[in-house]
Length: 160
Image (cartoon, rainbow, N blue to C red):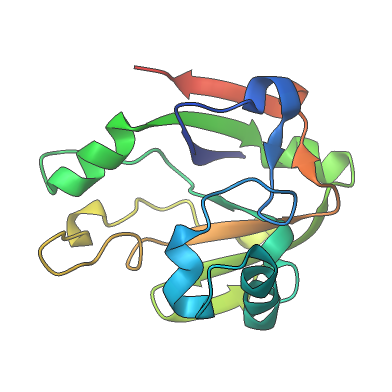
């Protein structure tokens, strides 16, 4: 099963792999308000209190974002990122997965790989005016046993 991740345009993923927040990858600013701090270690503690392994997880989608004119923030997000993917089965085979968590709206729960829901995502629910971005979009946190997903597993889907 292919899973998708949006990475900043300027990155070293194809050389160093896709890292976790705990390994130093990722912008901390989305967590400042929730963690009530700008300190990366405080944010990591907040993450781990939300669920075990969150600080060493990769956030993924089951499909690329569909920008059908539904909201300009989706297009802006896609335009400012590259889309990469990896095969979850490869990571499982190589014992790189500790757990998988699903965030579906307000619900957060652990799932087995075989229970990942690949039905179409409701991109039309994203609404910049209402401040709703990824909250209504079901996504998965892949908790790694390693610090990074090695470049050999990663495929660049677009760099437009």
